[in-house]
Image 1 (cartoon, rainbow, N blue to C red):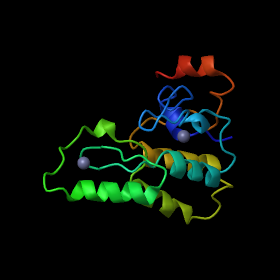
Image 2 (tube, helix red, strand yellow; image 1 turned 120 degrees about the vertical axis):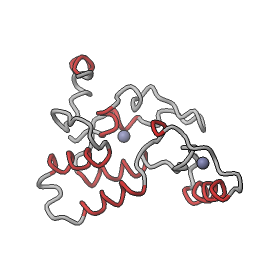
Image 3 (spheres, rainbow, N blue to C red; image 1 turned 30 degrees about the horizontal axis):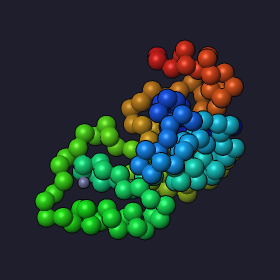
Image 4 (tube, helix red, strand yellow; image 1 turned 30 degrees about the vertical axis):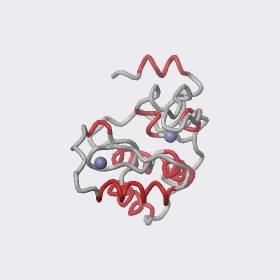
Length: 155
Ligand SMILES: [Zn+2]
Ligand SMILES: [Zn+2]
């Protein structure tokens, strides 16, 4: 099973204990914790559902909600305000932005996505976290061996 790359990168943030403070919904990142995803296709669906918040790319304010069109409309209103929002700290960027999605879609077109899924997973990792050290494996062993995982997390 393939792990959620966000969980792999930061199991504490993208774990079951996290609640979505914006709308009080519990366990926003429950699916990130495990058991994982059996195909790249499934993983991408998860990334789209959970890790693509509507967010201002200047101040990094998030526009939460269940209806994406409404969220996007709110964002668009926000960006049209005559007093431009302040440039925020880039570390507040959440999830996957449009540029990264375009890169992932480009990968999609290549053949044999599932036959080389470990390779593909690392390609996704590189798009999501440019310059970050790749984990040893894309597999979701954190679910099975949480202690092993947390001990080795800080390399
Ligand atoms: Zn996830
Ligand atoms: Zn803004």
